[in-house]
Image (cartoon, rainbow, N blue to C red; front, side):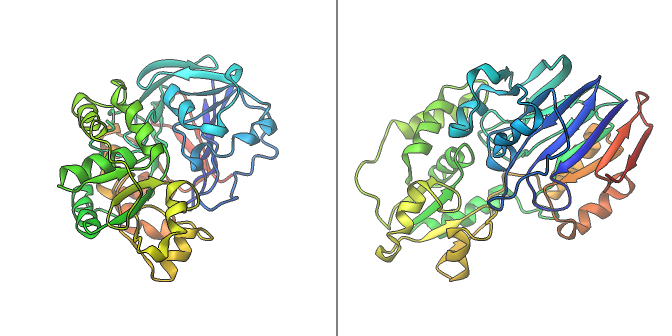
Amino acid sequence: MARLTAISGVGGKLPAAFLLEIEGKRLMLDLGEGPEPGVFPAVEGIGAVDAICLTHAHMDHAGALHLAEDLGNPPIYATQATFDNLGALAPAATRRRILPVNGPAEIAGVTVSLGRCGHAPGGVWFHFAHAGGILYTGDWSVESALLPFDPPPPAHLLVTDASYGDRDTSLTDQIDAIARMAAAGAVLPVPGGGRGPEMIVALAARGLQPRACPQIGREMQALAEDSRSVDAGGRQAMRNFLANPVDGDWRPTDVIVATEANAQAGLSATLLRRLEEGFRFIFTSHVPRNTPAHRLLASGRADWLPWNVHPRRQDVLDLADRTGASRIMAAFVDPDAMPQLGESLGKRLITDRTITLSPVAGHSNGQDS
């Protein structure tokens, strides 16, 4: 028997933390903060776990690693690229366990299959071949031109990123709109270890001359040599960009891709302090309250346009059908933002925070936790 409990991540845009109890082991799948600053999973009383498993390095999935002490300080499993992108959050080397970006592996003695998630460098989904299959996607996307998405095996239970709810606009159309708006100059804030390199490549392909902040430049250098995470075409596109560096001061007429996503740190924060010089900001991701981005947008001094890094409604439905999932837990989304998705999923959609799965595929019992 296996049991999965949503400690956090279901019922709203909340940090990821899912407890999987399987084969006598207790695995914490992600342990994040946010996206609102200071929002953490309630792990008090959970007790010791055998492993913390990270899908990728973004704060809402890995930003609460300091809570590992409350979970018995277990080893932390992630890909090398994820550990590299954790920065100051990275655990001591003695606690790290390196996972492949795809293929089979073992976590605390439990067999697992992994695949690339198309969302972040080194990002993966986890599939456990128990009770007809248990798939935890973390964040994922099939639209990235740089980061591949590996189709997962069949699964009876699917815990999927549904961050965008009913959104169904294509990334291609979104990039076209952003390129038009940014053509005369714009600062495009992005998270570290995320969409930055792809944004550079996509805007360059549309005839713009984007500039990368130093951090995004370093990420592109690493990805350009990472054949496991990026295909040959994407690596060459990044090499082409890196071969023609643009030096000098940052100007309001430049198209600048810069960390961090909400202008709270990095070059985007520096340029925000120079706003009166004419720098224009275009934000493209979820904007938490009490951030510089939120204040700038509220004052009407910035624009917001979407850039998909999560699945659209049609992508979630396609994954549900391809995996054959009969139980689907929609994560990281306000239920009010997904009426069409919920209607399409029908009885497959579960709202219980805990689901217990028998060893026989097709028999499960969901209950509130």
